[in-house]
Amino acid sequence: MEPTLPSQEIVRSLTDEHVLRALMQHRRLTRAELAVEIGISKPTAGESVRRLTERGLVADTGERTPGGRGRGRVGSYYALAPAVGVALAVVIAPEGVVAECLDIYGDTVSRAVRPIDRPARPSQAADALATAAAEVLAAAGRPARLAVVSAADPVDRATGRLVQLPDSPFLVGDLDPAAVLAPRAGGPVVVDNDVNWAALAERNTARDFAYLFLGEGLGCAIVSDGEVRRGHTGLTGEIAHLLTIGPGGRAVRLIEVFGELGLRRDGSTAIDVERLLDSDPATRELIGQAVAGVVAAVVALADPQEIVVGGSWGPPLIGSIRSATTRMPREVPVRPAVLTGEPVLAGVRAEALNRLRSAITTND
Image 1 (cartoon, one colour):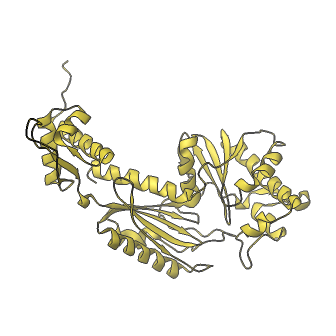
Image 2 (cartoon, rainbow, N blue to C red):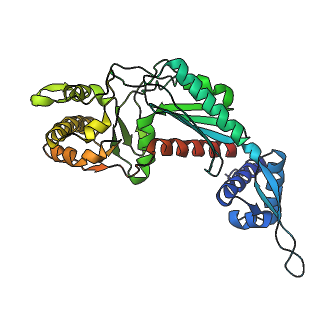
């Protein structure tokens, strides 16, 4: 039986995808350079450029190669057209809303920050989100093909709405980021919690790990085979209510440990990070024991290769946490996160860029 040959339409589609990806990598190329880069003939490269130009995805930059006087024909440089759009990358945190527009090369072309009160009201958070998104899109001057959003609250996997759990210090359980951003994004709006995004940003350093986020709030992400495991409703890793070792050796929920040690913000279950970092060695040892109890539960249930500790106070207390975990039934390596500067935003940016490139190459 003779093998089935691919149709001309499939061949053209694959060629066009290779041309787009080459331009994403090199920003501008001539048709001759595209032919060499991809390994196709110059006429084939020229036809692909023509098709993509007609579709508004590629444009002549107006730049020309040196030519004439024995140096060959003048070549035109082509690049991705501005009409391919941008991706919205958004972080909703206790400090406020950060919105960025990323272009196809991963560059931030505009950025806006809007503060919100503590505790945030749903209407105020929604207004800040809409205003920040409108501002960055106006500054970018290009349409948004999609949006990727991080929220410092549990997120319902099916709907993208925030979920208000008991003792959750943030944010606004009634907020629906996808609905707020839908009028401004031409495609999907992907919403997940901040801990999962921080873990994804750490994924370049490991493939199987549990990421403990220890800051004003408490969270955990389980990464297995390079993928975040979210559970049936998306609430995997909500460790605040895990029973652990509290003051006096009593079994208490993790979030209650900080209340008993006087380390919560007034009128909130949010942890007072500044006060915690100024605490004495005995208090740090108690906190290390409490976190080690959570680590023991995570290791028993998820079997990670290592524990990665991030957040504002987790890495500074890594010594106390490591010391306490040596007494666990199953000891695994515990290390601080590699990414410490805006890890949540780094994860959101990476996902937004990947989705934007995929949307353009597949013409979604």
